[in-house]
Image 1 (cartoon, rainbow, N blue to C red):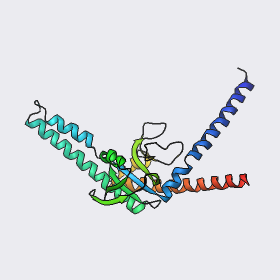
Image 2 (image 1 turned 180 degrees about the vertical axis):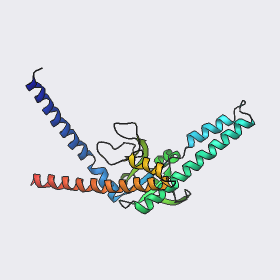
Image 3 (image 1 turned 90 degrees about the vertical axis):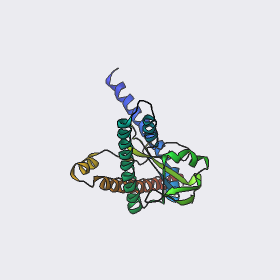
Length: 226
């Protein structure tokens, strides 16, 4: 392949990539507006599967007194860590997230929630008790859940639709492990609170920026059509 052919192919690939990026952004136009005028559901980790696995292990015949005590400590620590993070995450959203209303629920309740089309369901309050009864139309919400970030195996919080479609292709998300969160862990005993606030503020800012860019694209399209 000579140089001319190489450059032509690369130019065509660039055009194709740009077209794909533009198309992906257009796909996300509807979800960002649904979220702005609707509701965000944050799916908190309950650690239910891990806890049940440990409970099952403690009931095995070969798990004697010492084994049972060890498992009890593991379950207690798992529960404490879960509650500590979820409490700070909820507080961070309530104090720093202004993009739309937010409700919280445990991932273990996902199936029951979906079966009722997200209506008449109790959601968690700031103390992780089921107190808020909400009636939320399925087509007016997005879900924020723990998942792997796009193009990597990093831990993050990503959006999905009520039907379980993960929004990628440039849609905002937050990465849990980055330079800022690492520095907070190393420098502060209160790193969990600081990291939750940082991540939620960043998400709030990114959503507003994405909506602004979406509005600009919409205006440009309307002008082109005139």
